[in-house]
Structures are given as structure tokens and as C-alpha cells.
Length: 77
Image (cartoon, rainbow, N blue to C red; front, top):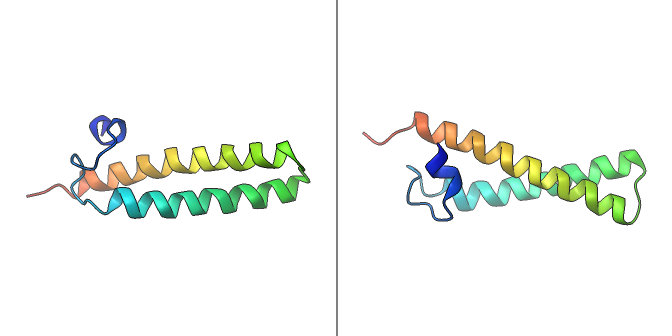
């Protein structure tokens, strides 16, 4: 799992589509979640961007961890 998450290419992944497709979906999900939380909290200006960036980073970290676990379960035969 460590080799999947610490490299910037997708050679360690069993399914090469997890990285580009999963990254785009997770980024969109993180930004949308961040904007919704910032709006619900009533944040403005720099606080809105801070909440959005935090949600983006957390979504990407947790999402790629989940994709790595899913990829480990679907090993090449």
C-alpha cells in the first residue's frame, strides 16, 4: 500500500485508471464538500478557502487510501 501512495506514477497500481479517474472524482468531491461546509459555517473570505482546501486534502488522502486498499484486494493473478 505504501508503494501505491508514495509514488507519482501509476506503475504500482493494478488498475491504471484508479489514479487519474479517482483523483479527478475525489478532487471534485472535496471541493464541493468544502464549499458546502464553508457555507453552512458562514465562513467568508480566507476562511472559506481554508475550509475548502482542508476538505480537499482530507478527501484526497482518505480517498486514495481507500482506492489503495481496493486495489490491493484486486491483485493481478
